[in-house]
Length: 260
Image 1 (tube, rainbow, N blue to C red):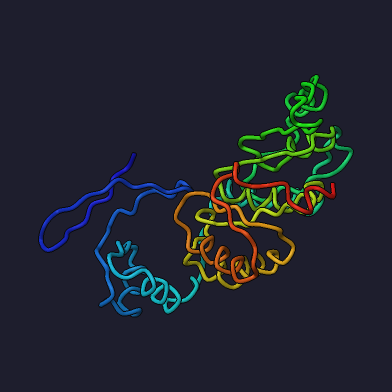
Image 2 (image 1 turned 180 degrees about the vertical axis):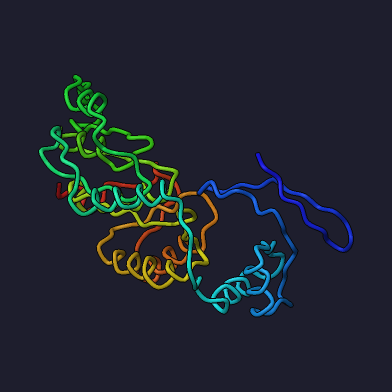
């Protein structure tokens, strides 16, 4: 794992660097806190200096907003640009999945849903008989769901309850838009791909959408992890009178589940 270095009160400091979007560590880092003005932060950012924030979280959000969105020419890797263009075509036209007899529209940053060998395996493999104590109900888990194609195949095969999990942010966002999933909606919490809990785009576009989607929900599952956006959605859910669960095992059979 990479390391970043900076100086604090004339003392050299270092810390491990982690980025979900694989952003390389900054070569120059300076400490910043509540005393830093937006003009100074903007000047340092323009010089290619990263700010290691050590102040109040709310003030960090305010500083980021005050700096405003990036402006001026931007250089992008040709390889990445071609990937974005290809992903946009997939998103617009969709990818035909024979096992579903339907199209899936992947988001950028999500693996292709057309790896036929494992899609066909899930589509045709014998399924275990439901346990007697479950009264005929069967549950399947899709770990690392990606586009949600395997979860969709399992649902089409008649599995009563499909639980799809994903650690990465964009696949969660993408799987929440699968029409075959029904009323289960994945609310995005974006810490990568250029959007995070302090990103103006997330504040202005993504989270308001998530709040509107809460009107269609019976309950909210809050998974572990630090996220201002998720905590905000939970607060909205509670104000709407929705139950909030912190463990999958706590979730009962909800109204919309029972209708399917």
